[in-house]
Amino acid sequence: MDKFVVRGGNPLLGTIKVSGAKNSALPCMAAAILTGDELILENIPQVRDIETERRLLAAMGAEVDLGYGRAQHRTSIRCAVLSDPVAKYEIVKTMRASSLVLGPLIARTGIARVAMPGGCAIGGRPIDLHIKGLEAMGATITQDHGYLEARTNRLHGAHIVFDKITVTGTEDLLMAATLADGDSLFENCAREPEVSDLAALLNAMGAKIKGAGTSTINVHGVAKLHGARHRINPDRIEAGTFLIAGAITGGDLNVDCCNPAHLGALIAKLEACGVRLNVGNDHIRVRSGGSLKSTSISTEEFPGFPTDMQAQFTALATQIEGTTTVTENIFENRFMHVQELNRMGANITVEGRTATVRGRTPLESAAVMCSDLRASASLVLAALVADGETILDRVYHLDRGYEHFEEKLRNVGAQIRRMGDVFSKK
Ligand code: EPZ
Image 1 (cartoon, protein in one colour):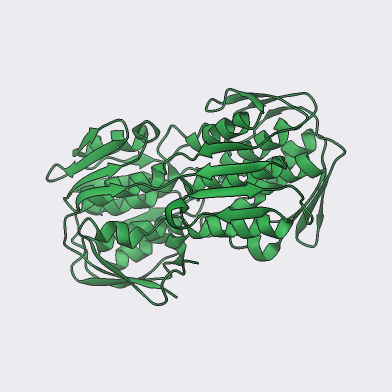
Image 2 (cartoon, rainbow, N blue to C red):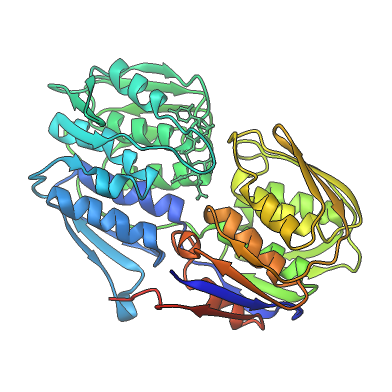
């Protein structure tokens, strides 16, 4: 398994480019199931989860072409015939977002067989709200040997109030409602930019969606959708990770090709810490303003502070004078990075859903273990300021959601290299 070797100490200097958003690309690729025409998606990040999604769709009979070379961020997908509408366990077990095909499959074919996602490092992550919503739209869903079997003649519109705000739950039902008979009204929806990005694609395919990006969404079902071309949003979590990389290393970094409007909560917290940010239309320059002051965070649904930035902010807090409290409200087990950071010399205690970070503690190199995507990013950030060479194991977690992470960081001065067989490019 690949490892990273990181020697700390270099401030990051220069411009670093942000790729397309993994969490937009995945639902947008699943949306291809809703039509037999070709879908062309641009700004698709080259990360492992996209490769997994390609395999998932191809196994159902879809033609999926992940562009390479000059077209390496363009993907064309055609689901003319879905000969085998099954999301197989071998694939679903590696990526929970596979459950995003449930709604589109049942809406397009009237039948779907989707492996139930198992446990996850960051929490239980059930999909009961997806199932409940599809049942309200007329699907019959049964469980069979670890698979969900869903059937319907045709879905119908429904009034659904989500018990809890769920991103992929909103996306799954939104896709299902586009081909349903009649109108759907969704309330307490997720307002994440990824939901708006998906809705923009669906409307370009001929859907009739209003209100995406707000907590109330209306969908007027149509009989058929057609092909479209769509450019995926920049990845706000990758952009946020680079902002913290610039701040924690005391660097001067221009984070380019991002959308600052998607980063409001993080920008506010970094400025409250004393980080200097110059915000442009599609870029943010970050410079750390000398000694930073502690500011506590509490993760919320968008537009609140994103849970996917919590681990990275926790790493920054180890380098800030004073006590920072970090409260995780979205997932019940998202502090896997804490013990690894403490192994590097941090002073963090966890009580229930709150971590208390006492800083500033000089970090030292150690052998650490990656456990999930964002926890891994926080360990790389810590290693960039640690004294000595840190060895990060199981970086396949990072490859799931960060495109060419180590190359991008090396190009702005980080001393980081990958050990083991390189992440294979076809
Ligand atoms: C999406 O996951 C993202 N993944 C996650 O990013 C992100 O952390 C999360 O939203 C929250 O922002 C993708 O978009 C592919 P949720 P999702 O459903 O949709 C509970 C990353 O690092 N819930 O909004 O799975 C759930 O357990 C990943 O890129 C139910 O109880 O998250 C959680 O506590 C990690 N029943 C809360 O809701 C349901 O049916 C929010 O989860 C669905 C969710």
